[in-house]
Amino acid sequence: MARTKSSLPTLSWLAAILLLLLAVSTCVEAQSGPMIGIDLGSTHSSVGVYHESRNETRIHTIPSYVAFTQAGTCLVGQAAKNQSILNPSNTIFDTKRLIGRNFQDTDVQENLQRWPFIVIDRDGKPAIQVKVNGQDKNFRPEEVVARILQELKEWSEAYLGQPVTSAVIAVPAYFNDAQRQAINDAGTIAGLTVERIVNEPTAAAIAYGLDKKGGEQNILVYDLGGGTFDVSLLTTEDGVFEVLATSGDTYFGGKDFDNRVIEHFIRLWKKKTGKDCVEDLQAMVKLTQKVEEAKRVLSSEMSVRVEIESFHDGQNFSEVLTRANFEELNMDLFEKTLQPVEKVVKDAGLSTHEIHEILLVGGSSRIPKVVELVESYFDGKKVLKQDSHHGEKAIVHGAAMQGSRQRRFL
Image (cartoon, rainbow, N blue to C red; front, side, top):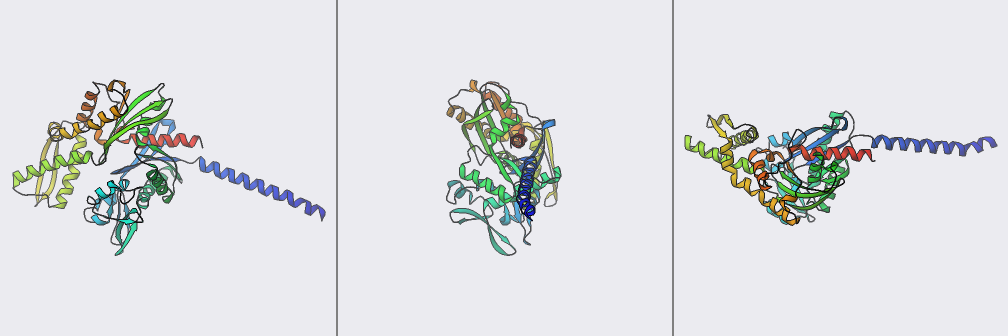
């Protein structure tokens, strides 16, 4: 009997050791899992899975849209954007402009008239009001962003064939602590641990391998997206980045170039047919899509034909758009982008000759005239060439690379 009693502590210690080993094993298993990189954009959001052995990132991109149908179904990404023209008040976009802000913030108040959905004051914070099953329902911006993050998470899990619980998320360099915390909260709602929040220009510089260069480097990041334009000046030494200055326009981007072309085509249509197609919503949606496609083609071709069957009143649309036409329509806007460039260089106390590298980021930065103007501003200095990893995907590629490195040190 005494022997039985004396063996109990031994069994307790063995059980404790086994539990400890199981906990350590579970922790190691969790830490060895994949960590994704996410670029949460105003118009599009991307997720990247970095394969270190091939120095390659598999990227998936969706429109930053969330919508609620009359039946209460929640749509995310392309499905939400596709029905936006028919369900505008229940289709949410631009959430990046709301997250982490107060309702009375100037940026929020200025946007209230721009959005077709309703934004209300909820305890001093903005909340988005939509109709779900015929009743008003309010969502915090974090909850909406979480739907987008969850969609990206699910794609990653399907691609990798295993659960994904960790992410690195890229945000604008000007995001404050409240905005960064809100991104963390959105990640938690989506089932993600946000291991690190990285500045977008820093992620772009990592994608271009500039953290590997020795010595001090001054780097200008020119990020021209679909709806926002950011210019940042970074300095890096031994892989450590510091943001020296930022500027830009949060309501300017590729859509403005598209609108100039759309207005041009509307004028041509009215001149040829005598009809005004502006009030024909379906015609305008078709024209907008075709103009976006044409803009991309003109980055590599000198001309493109824009054709739309049954465009308006049963008539077909067919016009040629040349690169020269496109540049003429938008030249003042292209030149406008140099103002923030000048500002960040001046604010950083540098001259153009002290900029070592120039990174062009965002889809609209591929426009040949934009490249030409930026290089001319820097006295002919060449921008870094863009490949499949860079350009419009540089930020998510850099975030995914940072996630891979972060995982190694956990």
